[in-house]
Image (cartoon, rainbow, N blue to C red; front, side):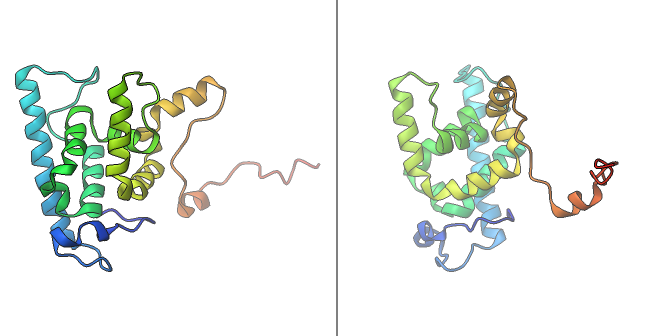
Length: 188
């Protein structure tokens, strides 16, 4: 299970997963759900490859990447068994299979303002409202791996002369950095 500052919202999955809203799902239950999601995404991608469909210009491997798996874990923790069994989540799983988990997070959190196709705007609304309970988990992932989720943002920032977003430094790393000149000699 992911560790961090967000708390999974189990209020959306208590009916289908057996969990109570006040307690988090056991790791074993999350692992089973993620395994099911991994199998579904892999089958969808393999089927798409066999039929020769390419829904985007980027290469998507047949099996989910580590980032895809982190997103599937966030979805499993947030929605429980409902993410697998409830047909209303099919568009989200299909989106992960077709475009990848990072694209799903970007779509839900930031929308796709570059998409001029009317169906693209509808997709933004559907995914954003469908996965609103997953936003804290998605924001946590963006903060943990900004290099993966904010690649386009970093490119735009560099073009404007700003530095790229980086992963926050933990206190242990900060203590291990000893600058050669801490500014104490600057006044001399």
